Length: 186
Image (cartoon, rainbow, N blue to C red):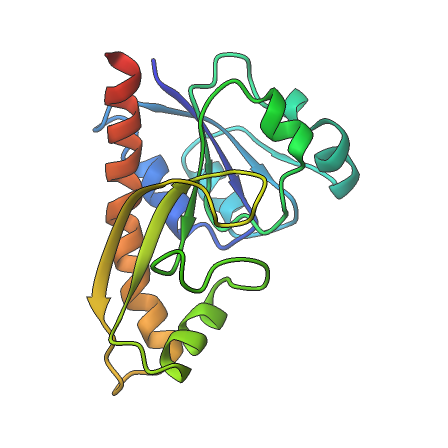
């Protein structure tokens, strides 16, 4: 079985999509790790997925100890804490992140949620979208796995454009998981 651990700090919308499709797409979400009380916990409970709340000090010192040994993929979905380099060095499986922009644009520290869409619209971009990329020690700078884009609708608010990007995220994260799962099977 292809085992996935999800790290989240958010409401859990993308996590819910990943959890709800595990049987259909033949993977297993073995655990959710959160760094604070958040909506993702309720989604884990609903889907009978184990979860742990990990304190900031534990993230810095020994996050790797929370990852089951049989994990094939770590997925960051709305995870807001920067992963320490020691974790990146010790983790034996790929780590990917979902980001709500067309990286390398609008990435890095402080670029998350509606802040991304506010910046996109302030700069009068023609397109926006989302990116799934490998996690490296430099925030939002890892190799891009997949991207999807849509035209910016200036009749919408940044919050509404974020909702449109979120719909793309729901699709692209499943595509990325399947792509990496297939890659691991070969």
